[in-house]
Length: 158
Image (cartoon, rainbow, N blue to C red):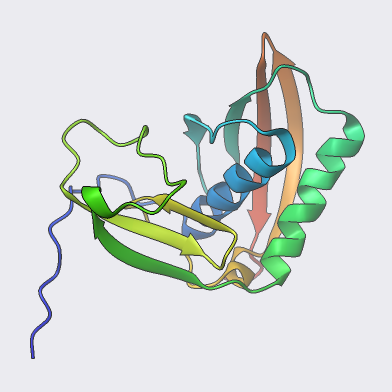
């Protein structure tokens, strides 16, 4: 029996899988901690990544430490990263589609990280959070309601 693969938009990026998966976890962590939206502005790379969030106030140094702690806790939980294909009329509650391009296909791929996060994404990811390695915030800044986190992941020999 042949299973037909859904047709998705082409993807022109070769993401660094651990950093890109960490971006998903960080987005959900920020949503949960600060009640903000997922980032719409991120630059994810192997050596360092930057991501911005719209926040009314700058997080305290203690909150920044808590972000990093929560990320490493999630990574250590070894959460599975799984995929599900759905049509636009079968999107689970809470999944926003505002980052999708206008020409996105009718069938979407949802990426789940355990029970912690779910979002539409056609990027590349690790198979479980343990493969991300250690998450380290290297700097932060706050300017006119935009909070930037610069981070890197240390994946050891991977």
